[in-house]
Amino acid sequence: MNDVDPASAVRLWHESTPGAVVLDGFHALKHALRFGADVRLALTSDKESVLALAAELADDLTGTLRRSVVEVPADALRQLVPKVHPTRVMALAVRRGRADNLAELAAAPRRSPVVVLDNPRNLGNVGAVVRLAAGFGATGVVTTGDLDPWHPNAVRAGAGLHFATAVEPLALDAFPPGPLYALDPEGDDIRSVTVPDDALLAFGSERHGLSPELRERADALLALPMRPQVSSYNLATSVAMTLFHWGGPN
Ligand SMILES: C[S@@+](CC[C@H](N)C(=O)[O-])C[C@H]1O[C@@H](n2cnc3c(N)ncnc32)[C@H](O)[C@@H]1O
Image 1 (cartoon, rainbow, N blue to C red):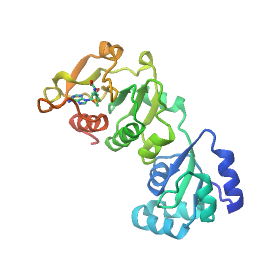
Image 2: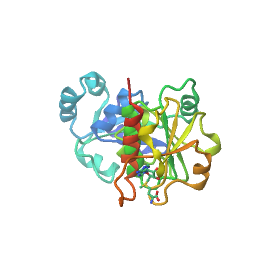
Image 3: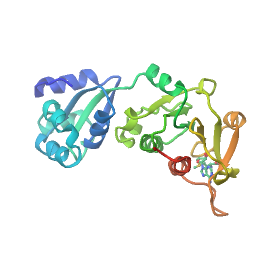
Image 4: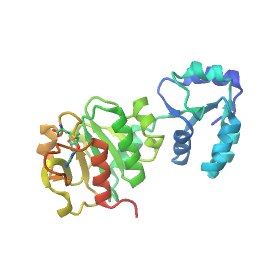
């Protein structure tokens, strides 16, 4: 991050927005910095509060934030985003490169699963899954279909953790290697299976479930325990239970 004066900061924000990722709020900025994001600009209308939050929640970043966060008038901040986050801080970071993500996804041996979201429709779910994958130390989150997992609403729901795991849209024929376990209420009980570290764990879309193509490719269909008459769990909840069953970070 460069040190810039308030007037240039607002101009820089406009110039940098195309192609950049907006980090909305203190937690998103904190996570992005911790996981090595290239943060180009961070603005606030209340630097004292930002530093107080840092002292309370992110002592490791106090120095960086003191040096880099630029204070601008509240009016200026309101003009830059539709809704200013309650922590009154926002930042712009460079999207993680596709080449880096693909290298991470393909690295062998893989020590943690890749989560596959098959044509997800809800950006909040995508962000929640990225957050889960980051927390569990999963290698990455791959999506099929037309939705960009780096969409601003997904990044917002991911709390800045898109920088902590490899998040990339990918066609089915470009998936990294590894046994493909597809989660489906009609599958075999997941409790009878040990999920290996190099697994691909695939989840269907919110409305239609797994696509026929993914179902066809799967090495096994696994079900999460569920009471009769309940049709399915929420997508992000299903990912949480499956990663928990895998075992999580050591
Ligand atoms: C909201 S559900 C999809 C519901 C969809 N109407 C269907 O027909 O499958 C989204 C995804 O979560 C996973 N899922 C939900 N409940 C599950 C369960 N009990 N067992 C395994 N996977 C489940 C599946 O991957 C599913 O495709």
